[in-house]
Image (tube, rainbow, N blue to C red; front, side, top):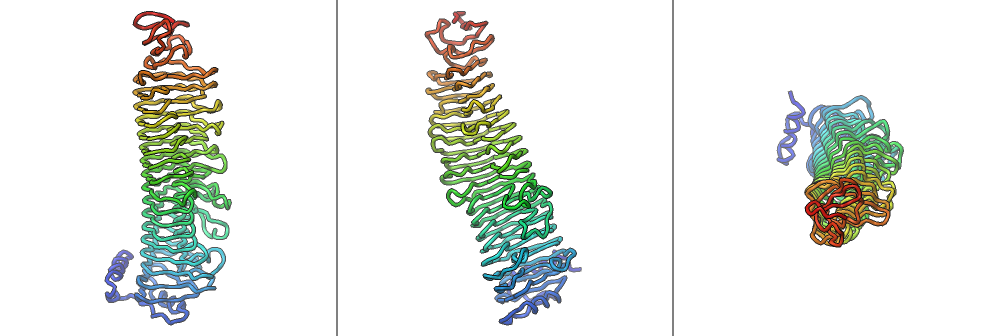
Amino acid sequence: MITRRTLLAAASGMVLAGDAPPQEGTVLLPPPSGGDDTGALNAALGRGSGGVVRGSPGAHYQVSAPLVVSSGTTLIMSGCTVTLATGSACNLLTNTAVAGGGRDRDITVIGGTWVRAGGVGGIGPDLHTLRWRRVDGLTLKGLTVRTASDKYAISLGDVVDTSVTEIRFAVHSDGVHLQGPATRTRISGIHGSTGDDTVAITPRDWQAYDDVFGPVTDTVIENVNAASLAALVKVLGGSPETAALRTTVRGVTGIAGNNVVWIGDDTADWRTTGGRVDELVVEQVSATTLPSRGGMVHINGSFVGHVHLRELRARGPRGNEPLVRVTPLRAAVLDALTVEDVDVEQLDAAPLLAVARTVTIGRLLVDGVTVAGTSAGTAVTQIAGVVDDLTVRSVSLATSGDSYLVELPAWATHAAIRRANLSDVRVAGKGGALVTAPAATHVLPRLAVSQTRTVGTAWLVDLNTRTELVVSDVTIDDTTGGVARVRRSGAAVVRGDGLRSASDSRGVAVSAGGSLVSYALELAADVSELVRADGSRATNTNARLSCGIGPVECTGLTWQHLRTGATY
């Protein structure tokens, strides 16, 4: 019995051999007629239904209606060109179920250059060039698609077990466009140029093209290297009754017209707004964007679950666009976001990660980040919305002029980080702070910092909030600042041990109206600036105080030196 795998292996061999004789039972397409070849080609596809159909390398065909491939058929078109004529108003290549209903299975197309001429036209889904619907087991390999107008080059919908590999585009609109329902789709080795998104998942599509819809699950998109006037990869959730679940995007290079990877909603149509995106992994991305047109990853979904971004690489200046933006247009919750293994050459006016006012993130992990340089006033992580649990670890940062690792910006008056943990951080720069929350309305109740060293950064924290700061194994090597700057509405409590500061650093700066209580004995500061709380401790640096310099503890309202007993 001839299986689909046997046919594919045999077909691949014939393609590579070039002049190999056709396999017994193979149907050869007729030579081009010089006119309309539609009828002759479809007749040959009918005779070869369920078997192998092969075109002659070098043949140039012209058609005016769709070529139709049926179940069990392998169509080998390597070296052939098929052009859909102007005014045809239809698809170029489809499967039987598109017009005939039912489902098809085990269809393979190998090679060929598929051309949609200018002005083909059509209505709705007829505007797509290669259109596949209701297929179980579809393989497209080694195709070149060129379009001068109209919509998607390869349109997939209601498909199961689909493989689209080694495709080259020079197309007017999207390259590969996947609608639901779809299960187990692999899209790999995508090259060339697209006038819209290079690869797009829309479980439900825009009104004119919404012929099928449903969940899109278990999708792998990898090795995309193209030039797009829009996104290189777009993953939408569709409408509220659809979803994109368990998607992996891997190995994206090239250049995008707006964002390299777009996740969430397209608010141009209700059908592409409000669907769920969950269990999404984006990794090994180094593509760039046109100047000031977008970032590497843009998340704007109103219903997003777990997103994991890793191995992002950015070379050259970033301009005014964040590398990663979380910016829903309306109030939204993102369950969990991980951003890890990120290497950035230069941050300019925009942060590496920007979280907008409209979003609440349950868990945010920033891990393994290296930033070689920043412009003055830049933040690595800027939180204008709400983060319930923030973890930042394994960061190496070189800054210039009042830059920050974590910033709650002054203009985002209701920004909040309800719990934050920073560890294994190395910062070298000038001015600024590790963490800043300058507005009295900001919320930062607890911040833990451990295994961290700052060199040249003025302050560990710059706060106008009620915050408990817990430190462990922290070194501050700067003489202009120290552990904490507390603004006039701020109230900080410092706890912990293993705190080391430059010997002549100021330690703390507390504005009128602000307060700081220290229970960390190694906090070196002028204790006259600290609140006298029973049991509080610090290391006094003001020799003019009667308790003298050195470790002191407060009992009642009196500071007492722990070695000499002198009081203040």
